[in-house]
Image (cartoon, rainbow, N blue to C red):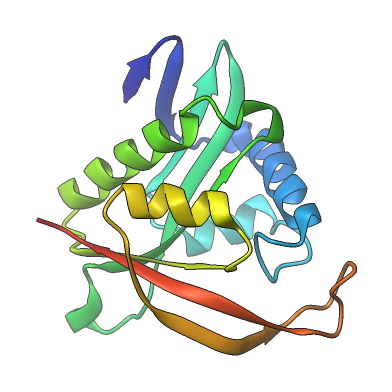
Length: 169
């Protein structure tokens, strides 16, 4: 757990799910956060995310952001490689919360034996690209036309993602 200026970074609990899902849904609505059309159920989230690598940022009792990771492969050789997602509530952006949450996530992941954190980000999501690069993520490459948007104004269009990774020191 990390606390700073009334910011508490702690593990996600079942009781946090409504706030986490609402932040996720708002990110989906931007059209620049994910190919997903809706947040999963708590049960699906709980079953697919690493139990020690899912955190919320709570400010004055309100959940304002979250980060979580899943394994990239079930093969033992990749046991230390995860893919993560981070979402910050619209009203909490620009205050450094994303940076504090990502810092805490990196510390938790390294303590859990993770040596590589990956993320796929839409190139239009400049804020997320900048956040990750400030925290040591490097661009591996562009995954051209990797997924088809199925919702919003871009429905039916193929989208690129930028693959970034951060290696532990």
